[in-house]
Image 1 (cartoon, one colour):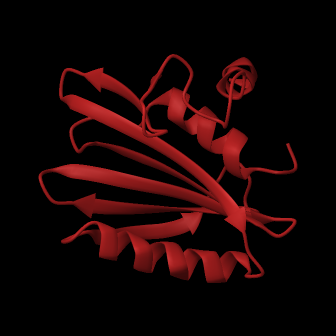
Image 2: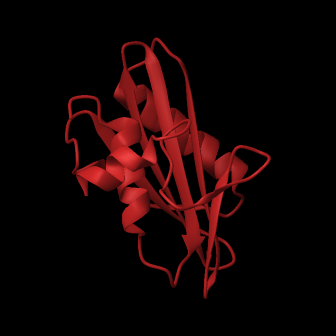
Length: 135
């Protein structure tokens, strides 16, 4: 898994290894169930991890009409440093948002997939690379 995590950051921001970068900065792959998307962004903040958890929840439900928060928990790969929130979206899709705050930077990585698709190992590695800061 360490090699996958290192490969995730080989070019540009952390992203799932083997996925294709689209023109809008979104990485994609296609499974038999449909398209999966991964997005990454970072920006300056003066807020805490709790502040980021609240703001990402508000942004998510505003962006995805009908989104329902299933859970928001510490990200087990780096507990105390980051969180991950899981949402049910309309049209039988799931959204996972990993987030952290480090040295005044908010980091947010999103993974959207069909509900019938299990979490991809490449995404877990990319999340870890994106939001864990004491590896």
